[in-house]
Image 1 (cartoon, rainbow, N blue to C red):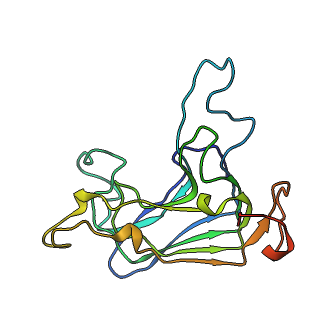
Image 2: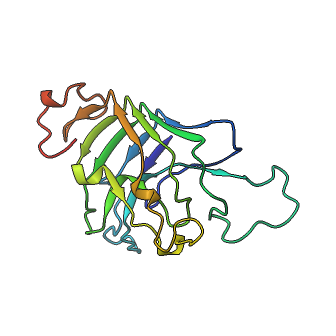
Length: 201
């Protein structure tokens, strides 16, 4: 899969039962933040839409998933999650090329390859295992971004009277990461000390 210059990026939300652990995987994809040929406000382009940008949002698993063959209309909004989060899901992001993620877009908006948590997603986020990915021209501030917990998640029977802090309690693991410089296309180095990447990962 190739993703270039995305405002929302990709995410996975998986329905699981209470006992069986499930796996969500994104692998061997090319994920690019800003690309010179893809401008938000091209000269003479007839449009201008300045967006914050994200490569992927955190993956989630939810309990009590919808029926395979629904018998009634789903609740709205269709893109929201209506059930509680589950710990029975693991996310694996493997062997992807991740390129051109400064912390701020060329138009001054926030930007990150991996954003943790969505306001309409569960407040429990699955563990994420990053393995064998290549980071090229990715600034430290452009790698990961946390969201503040939504006040709407406050549930006196569950979290007392304060918002759940799920988006800030996320397990991630990064192994066998390769690093590239500004001019490095795909390969990168297995050792970040072998390249002059400045303040970048």
